[in-house]
Length: 295
Image (tube, rainbow, N blue to C red; front, top):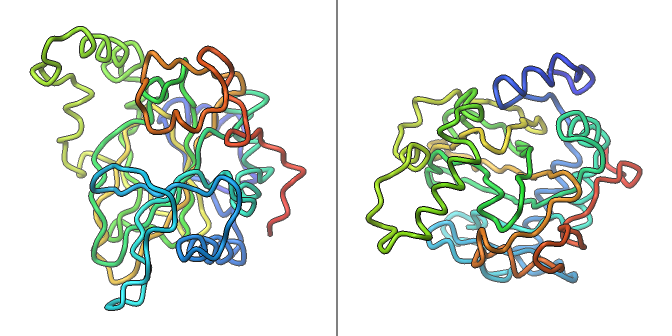
C-alpha cells in the first residue's frame, strides 16, 4: 500500500486483520543516517541527556550504553536491541513524520504520543527466535494499552532473514484480550505458587511454531503497523547479511500510570510522573509533524 492511499478502507482492514503493510516512508538517506547513528551510539561517540538503554536479549537485563564493541572476527557491531530511541533527536524526527501522525490519528485518535522506540538487529546467520507475543501495555504499568506498533525495515526484511510474522485477527480473539490478560495477572498474584498454574491460551501461544503465522516481507524503508494485541514473532536470520529494524509504539495521549499492574517492570524507572497521573515527559513526546526535517 502506498503511504498516499491510507483511508477508511485501510482503517477497516487494520481493524479486521490487526496489521497493515505500508509503503516506503524513510528515504535511503535517512535510513543510512539512522543506521550510522546506531553505530555511533554503540561506540560511545554520541552523548546526550538520557542516553538510550540496551537490553541483553539473552538475560533480559538492561544496562546503559555503550556496552558493545566491534567483533574482530566479523568486523560488525554485536548489538541486538537498543531502547529509548525517542530520546535521540534523529530518531524522534523520524517518529514525528507527518505520515505517522496522519495514520495514528486515524487509528488511535487526536493527540497521539510515543510510548517507546527500539532498534532491533538480527546479525548475519544469527539472531534469536522471538516467539509469539503481544505488546500488552497493562503489563507495562499502564492503565490502558498503547494501541499501535510501527515496524520499519532498515534493511530489506525477508522470510530468510527474520521478517515480522503475524497471526491475522488474533487481536480480536477473546482468549487473548485485555480481560483475559487481566484475569491471568490476578490469578498469578493470588496463587501461592504462580509457576504451578496451568498455562493460559495466551501463554501457550509462545510454543506455537512460526509456521502458523503470515510473513510480512518489507523493502528497506517500508513499514508495517500492527495492533498491540496482534500476536507477532520473528524467526532467526539464516542469511549472510544483518537484518535491522526500528520499532515504535504509539499511544493515545492521556494513558495513565498504574503501578499495581506491573510494579517492577524495567520501564517504570523512566516514568517522570506519579502513579495515577497521565504518562507525559521527555521520554513520551507528542507527535509534532512540523518538526519533521527528514527526506
